[in-house]
Image (spheres, protein in one colour):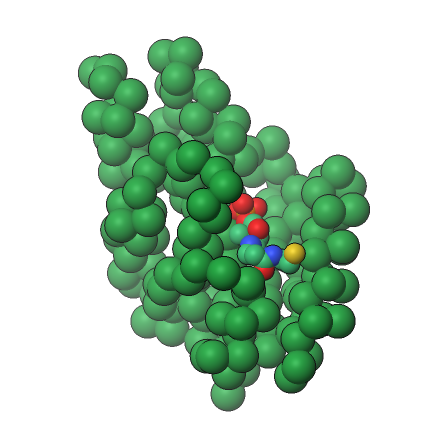
Length: 161
Ligand code: PNS
């Protein structure tokens, strides 16, 4: 059975992430969306909220589950016997960074952790969690970037109606 992990900050999950999750769920027998808690970043949403959002998003995808981890992805992969990581690529600008991380993970993992890149659907090519937070923080409408329940949670967080 080929199990894959889709790691990320998901702060918050966008429609671009969800597109990758749905496509990955058709390619792998099991997909674990893993919220990696990076203490260096100060997130908008707690890990619990991010997991809640993801669980709601994947509730109709039976082969997708949600998990969390603090530390290196290669350690998570080893503990959970996963050999494939999924990452979305939006543009060439993503590629340089992602390539370095993918090569590092492969080099440092004992069992070999390969990264499979999925190119983001064009309609979401501009989209990132940072863009969503930036727009929302200045009162912009992010309803076309995230599912309705995430839009609602952002409004509650940022204190707007
Ligand atoms: O959604 P993001 O912020 O682009 O996700 C980046 C993430 C969390 C996948 C990446 O930073 C990561 O894997 N962090 C865990 C630490 C690690 O394993 N780093 C890679 C080796 S330097």
